Amino acid sequence: MGIHTAVYNYFTSRSTEVQYAPPPSPKGKGTTAQSGMDLYQQLDDYLGNAAHEVLLGTPHDDSTLVHYLIPCFNRYAAGARSVHRLLNYVNRHYVKRAVDEDRGWLRLNDVLDAVAKTITEGDNREKISQRLKERRTEELRKWGYVDGGSAELLAQAESYAEAASPPDRVVPLLSLAYRRFRIDCIEPLLAIPKVKKKGGKNKRPPPSNGDKSPGPKGRLARSVKELLESKGGDEDERRRLANELAMCLRTCGVRADHPLRKRLDKFLVSEQ
Image (tube, rainbow, N blue to C red; front, side, top):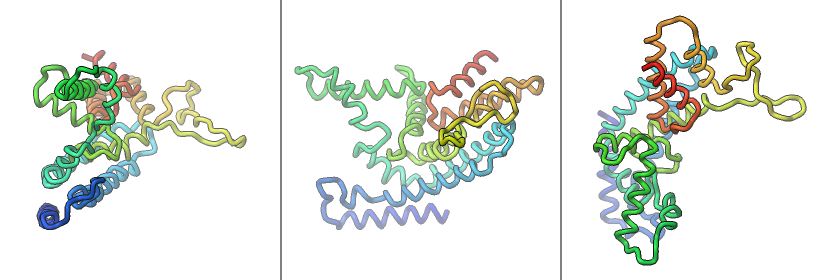
């Protein structure tokens, strides 16, 4: 409860400062725009450090990587949900205002070019606003939203899109946590490492298992390959791990067209 009280006191004291502060500058760099930014950044750093600790603890054996990552992510996600609830003042007093100020996951400039191509000379403000809304819905469809879907489906798709956004975008704390897990843990495991040879040129390292076939190069991709192609074992456990990893990648903002997500989705469909 100490951290909850600290955050509450932070925002109530800042609200008093803002009440008696001079108006913000035209560039939006006044007290109102800055209130909460430092706390938000500290939370971002904290979540990033927690995700990086998971990365540092990964086993050297790729065959056990998925088995390690799933429970680590589940514990991280449980902690992230607690932070999201406990520090809801940050969402209410800073994140909401930042989104209203066009600093959220989808900004006007992100969609302006596409919308501008469809605007005609006779369009009024209402029509332009509708086109911007349609462009946002188009983005959310990439994350599973369907036209006429429920409010829960909309919120879920938006949370995935928030987690997939660049680190300079202000998003709710839960999405912030998932974005940090993607950036500081998942993406390094998906990366294809390169080693330097004597000529100064980079080359990909040989397979760790001595197999001459190229196969996937990223650590997580190699682990998934071994999981899905291994003979024998518990089929229900294999499917559970594949399903939870697919959910982890989606939740953290790994896009649907990523090769690893496509492979997991294909496997899960074929096993139905």
